[in-house]
Amino acid sequence: MNTHELILPLSDAERAELADLADATGSTPEALALEAVRSHLRRERERVGAEGARLAERHAGLLKRLGQ
Image 1 (cartoon, rainbow, N blue to C red):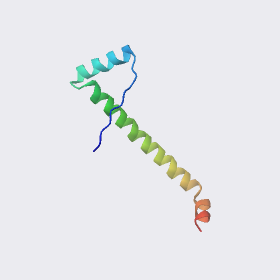
Image 2: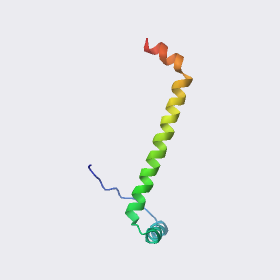
Image 3: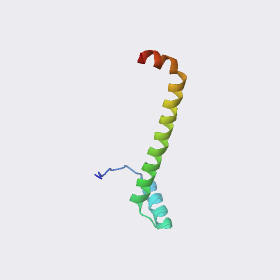
């Protein structure tokens, strides 16, 4: 798996809060940020997939005609 670094502009307060949460949970700020990004991507993938399925069902007749 290729990995790439990403720089996030956090305020001093956000950075401190992230560091405090990492310390309280025995994690690292980087691990918490990575999990937050992954969680957000999963939720958005599910949301977009569900919306695509809803639209496909709603317009099934049109999509069928276009496919002929």
